[in-house]
Every structure is written in structure tokens, then in C-alpha cells.
Length: 300
Image (cartoon, rainbow, N blue to C red; front, side, top):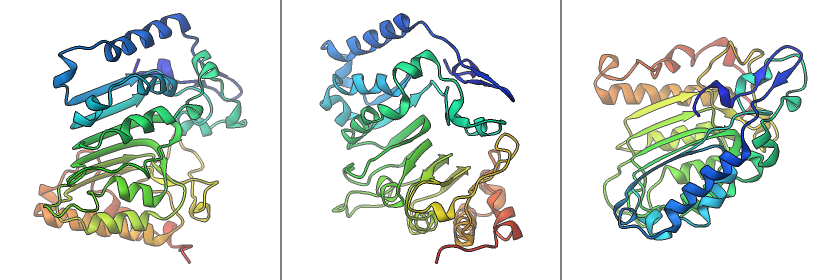
């Protein structure tokens, strides 16, 4: 379920998407629903939940039956949408010779478009108020609106987001403890991959993280802005998405310099470059911050 079979085969003049057995997908869906519908002593002790389901619609139906007391008890939650076929399902689909909107969907996406059913993921996460770890991976850059999410106590320790869309205010809220929390800060590690801001700036997000005393690890890959959002004037994209990779795509120099400042801070906090992770390109933002390619500042 986690390989290229759930992607569209994109060629220069055509595309094809897999055709799945919808009856088998429905059977899988009903099996998952049955796990949460039926009272079970095993569910009473669950504190770590990992769900990888074919499309966002599956999370919508699960959200309608999963017990709220189970979600409130969770300390670790990871959700993944597997079907990445169709327009904007992967960032490299744009490297083709025709309109990306014409990239073929799987028959599952035709029946249940990911972009139309994101409310289920939001409903599940919003009811998990005691999380230490949150990971969400979607396709089609689904807007994960968690403005109403109120974490208890010190909030998250670790966060992973992949292809989600937010406002800067929402993202900062996800990274923050409860408003009335007075204990020690506990945010430790964040990995953001192909996350897009609809409004606000990455400068705001990085500045927030710089001020968090416990924050110690950051990995970012291909962050950017929604080209149709309120911050679209900062939108930047590579000409060839399959060949280019950047930590942040932004026309704002302050976005790049604030990321550099944050990474330098984390390296110093760890005791130097030799003691801070580098296996997954965590230190690479230091190489780009003063590039002439990012000298234009459009924040004003």
C-alpha cells in the first residue's frame, strides 16, 4: 500500500492511475470500523494509534465511530493517506507537458476525492487533547484546519506533517502548549515535509520555534506557500520539481535567514555540528541562507 502503485504514472503526454477493487476497499473499511464499533478490553489500554488508510474518506467514516474516550487517552497518533493519484497528489506531477489538473485519478479518487473529505482527519486530531506525538501524512495538500484544537498541558513533544496546508497561526498553535500551562516546555522535535502556508509567513513559525527552550531538532523539506492564499506574493516554485529539492521555497529573504538562524541555534545547543544530526540533510539550510537566488525580500 505504500509504494508507487498508489501513484499516477505520469508521462510526457499521458497519465494512467491504478484501478483498485472498490469492493475490497469497502471490506477493509468495514473491518476497520468494526474494530472501533465493538467494545473491547484491548481498546481500553490503547495509547498509541497508527492508521494508514487508502483515502481521506476512510478517516471520515472512522471519525464517526471511534470512541472519544479512546482518542482522549492517546499519547501518540499517526495518520497516513495512501492514495496519492490524481492532480497534485505528488509534487513532481507538475513536471509534465500538459495541465496538471488532467492527471488521472484512481477509481478510488474518482469516487472519494481526498480534497473533499479532510474533515475526518481534523475531527480525529481535534479530539486527541493529550498527545505527545502527532504525525499526519496526506496527499493533494489537504488543509488541516486545527485552529480549534486545544492541547492539554505542555502540548506536543514531536510533530511530523507531510503535504498539509495551514495558516502560520494554526501551525504555531499546533506547536504550542495549552494557554494556561505553566510547567516546563516539552516541544522537542519537528519534521515538516512539503507543508504549505495559506497565510502568514515561515518567519513567524521559525521565530516561534527559536523561542521554545526545549526545542532541539528540526528537519524541513520543500516548505512553501499556497499560490492562491493570502501569502501568495511569497510563492516560489522550481521549474522542474522532480529534479529540484529545497528546504523552503520562498521569495522572502527573511524566511531563509530565520531558518538559518534557527538551525544555527539548534546546532549550538547540541554542542556543535558534529553533535547535531546531518544524515537527513538537517544542516543543509546553512548552505543556502545567503544565496543570491534568495536575495529578493517581498515581506513588506
